[in-house]
Image (cartoon, rainbow, N blue to C red; front, side):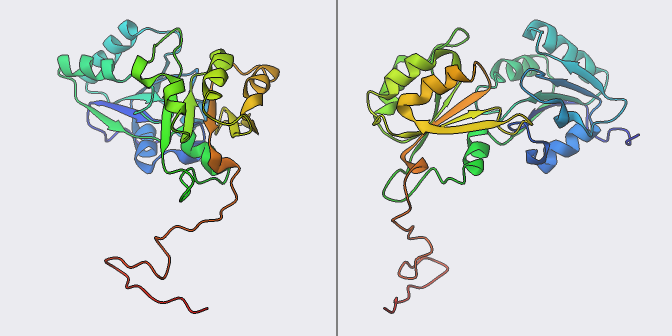
Length: 264
């Protein structure tokens, strides 16, 4: 059995990353392995993330629970001088719904700490061996979603207006509305723009397809993808590297390196 927790009584809100336990940060792994109680989003966080928790840790799946059930339990455990992990998928800055949780902990005078994780778009780009910001081609990454049943997108952030930038666009939470999303993207991106359709990145059943934008919806429907799917729409996915970053170019000088002439 692992040693008892040395953590302070508090809530540790952790981003578990996309699903691969080896992509947990060292800090997240340490806290997970010591925590007294772990509340985890079981529909989004694979069980292997919990493979090294204490044998006597209390594990609470929250996929079937509301915030009104989750918050009181966390507060009760911390007031019992226990360390509590609130485990979310991906990174906490993206669609994690932690704002209302932090507000509740603040009002209850419960200490909490945030431990960030790797987002699915980062893991997917790594799997694709792709840099999403290529000099003179694309230098902006947009992370967004399309309006759905659970949340609506502000009018100023409507997908078609974001597509007008033709940036590397990472589209979350869109599988159930993929035809609408594809139509909006096609208003600005060429139909042969490459799209990576990324299903359960980091999970054991991960699948990734790279297809033209015009086939994005068809591939989604053919493979019955309705959740845990990320779309990366980017000219970087199909572009051969023909330009070079100035950062490591010998003719580029900066604080730590003088400019040198390139001999032909």
